[in-house]
Length: 438
Image (cartoon, rainbow, N blue to C red; front, side, top):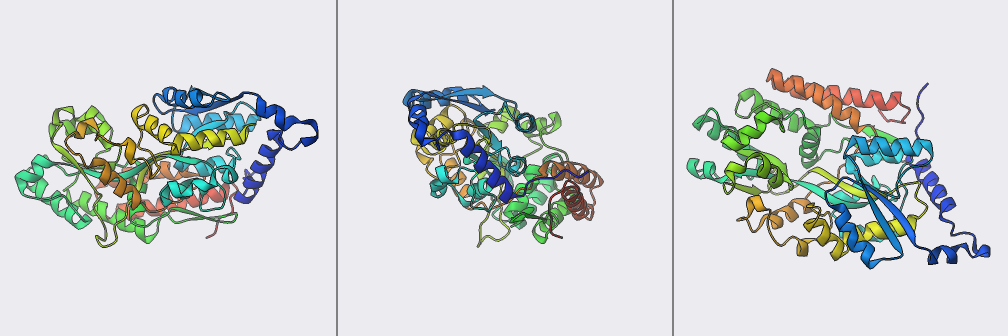
């Protein structure tokens, strides 16, 4: 039997019915609303961000009538699985949940998140369009407030570039040319690697090129992983791998970490959070790296993609939807909340009003005083991208199909891997009961 999922319209209606039924605000004759207003509201918050309990202390001190308790969770899939289990059981979910952008469609389809458009819809102007699209799914509903974003950035070894007399790449053609010069000068050095273990990285590259792998129109989904924009990205990297001027090894392995530290990896297409990784993996090279805007497909029309980022959402089981929405609005838009996110949780806020909190560059790039100006520009030009309800299936298919392509080092295998991802993702959506066009 196929599993049936609520279409977005149904999810929205169900979420509104649930939160209205639980709010206790409609019984005017009994004075319930006035009674509740006088009571101290207790909220629970599931998050994996570091030191979030310290961040929340600021809220609790300033809002004694709405107390938030942080429950630290494992990030990513474990947190989603735990929430979905609670939703299915009918109890046990928190009031507030940190949710990765790519997981929001899955949670919405499972009726796990409440629509807070009436409570927080006025915050749109405080976030880049790409972040706002991630929490609305392109609809009028609002399934969370953006918390942090991961605009992609390029990191490179300035000493290597200076030695070879090359400039930081402004375009992807420049990047390819730089990669060739670096590898020709030293056969052990690479400007980067194609990582078949990081589908979020490749999704961000595709986003920069103008792709959006899923789309939603009413209750009908579309899948466009194999579109022309993503094919352009796959062909580009497949060509560099076949040529041998970049590496084909996965990121985040002991071998990759060592390559960053010993100077055989001298560039990294990464994200705003990259300095923290470099500090841990390439500590011997501190002072030799610089961050730059991503290379562009069209320098006259700069664009970017995201690698990472999350929102703060109100769950459909919360009995205090209004208070929860008030808390997450403070957390992600109030100057005090943003300051705490930066200094205590070490996240890059999604809010466009975060410059006052970002006064010093990351310690690994302490000499690059314009780091956060570059990061802000990177976020500003990031294109919208819609994730689908079975992103886990697409990502798993990426790991398998592109893993084989990277190992073969054949350029033709890269766009072929996209076709595999497209078919796998589309078939899964149809088989699990989604209405899909095409």
